[in-house]
Image (cartoon, rainbow, N blue to C red; front, side, top):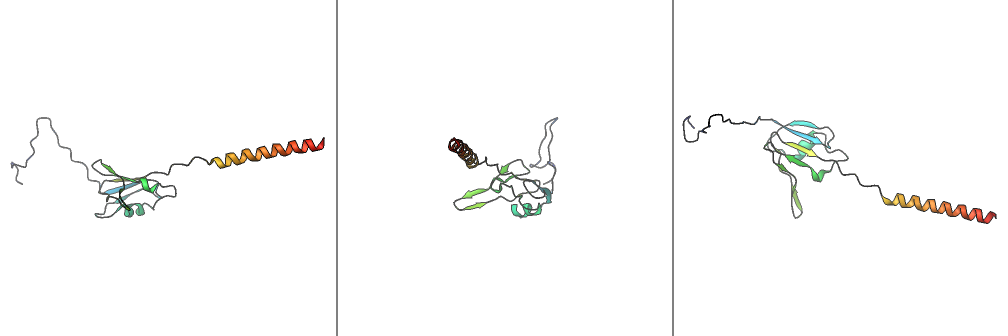
Length: 132
């Protein structure tokens, strides 16, 4: 519109307007092969940006990937019945791929070591008794 029109914003004394900086990239961080800032391409999906960062690393927790948009909001995959979809990142977004949580060591090895130890002790007792 024209200056002085109805759409003008009126500032009070000491007021200011913050115009966020336009960042023409999408940053891909976390558990990817080569974390990078990828040039924003309108309409490109999450897979495009992950692919340009070398793809997921072997320890990536793909299901917990999140996108933080330039306006500060964050989103994860939306699920409906059998379908899931990712929102497309916009310019200035940050895609973060977390690392899979480490599984606690299996109790099988601990139990197995205890059984072997008991068998060895039992064998030693049997050998000692038979030598008497």
